[in-house]
Length: 174
Image 1 (cartoon, rainbow, N blue to C red):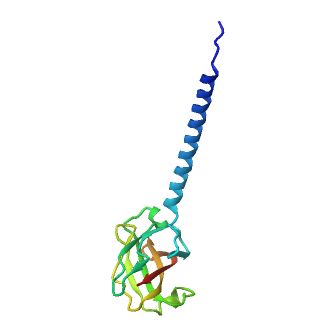
Image 2 (image 1 turned 60 degrees about the horizontal axis):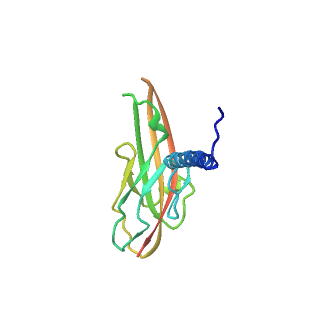
Image 3 (image 1 turned 180 degrees about the vertical axis):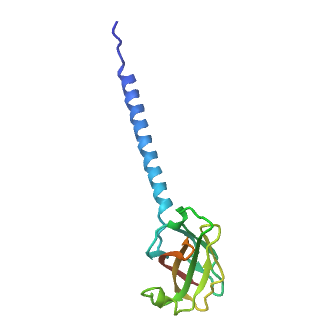
């Protein structure tokens, strides 16, 4: 006995099959996008990584009032975080910020400016606070994230490694 399928049943089957295929493709692209967002920073007009590591995320204001201070944070994921730490390993990260009109060529030149220093807490978080401006208008905060790892190899030998990231944060003071 031969079964006959109606045109309506065939159209329903094709529609259902197409819908399932489209849904799976859409979920896959969303999954890939969320994975990319985790490993790359939110790039915006007011916060840029000039060179170095791209494992940054932030929540900083783009505008503040005169005499107010910046309140926010930067999340920094270090390549050194994946290294198994022992009692002979020391790892710390500092963020240096300076109000600037001109970008520095390197960290040595940057150190000649008046710098605010922040230490990383909770393994990946820099709390930014206390930076105030006395003039209205656009301001640029140049920064460096210096990531240090000391490993005691033997009683008379220490391995020292660093990662350096150069960042620029622009803010408007109204």
